[in-house]
Length: 192
Image (cartoon, rainbow, N blue to C red; front, side):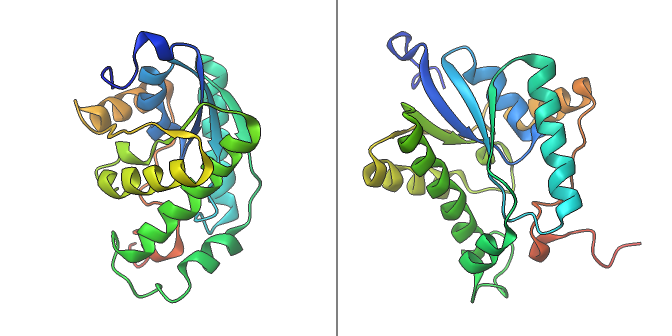
């Protein structure tokens, strides 16, 4: 991250899409040293409203306890995810449906960054070992061209980033979910 975050970028505004508090913890721990960060909580893929609200509350609690970033909520509309995933319901986890979901959330983030005058946009998604950082960066670069807001290239799982996010979640007592949130990846289904 240091190669991207130079001293000349200090204080620039970054809109960080966040999937949840635990994943954002490690990303924010690093990014707060280089940017003025606002967390964008846009996750229409979470198809259970109670789960959505629980994750959002944990994100807000982490930000209040640490002061690492501001917060921007986007409301809850899972129909946006179902529209993006239409025709991809049978895809395997980590396949084309996930790519469409990444694109949906990053496009919203880039568009919001443009509208709100941010210098950069990024996502916490790459901290997870289950997410494809190469795809995220590919999409981010395309959206950078589309909206004219810089994409912050990242792979937050590097340098034990995921492990650090687990430890920070434990330190702050954060709820860690065991699936991404969409009905297609609910790993708890069928388990007793």
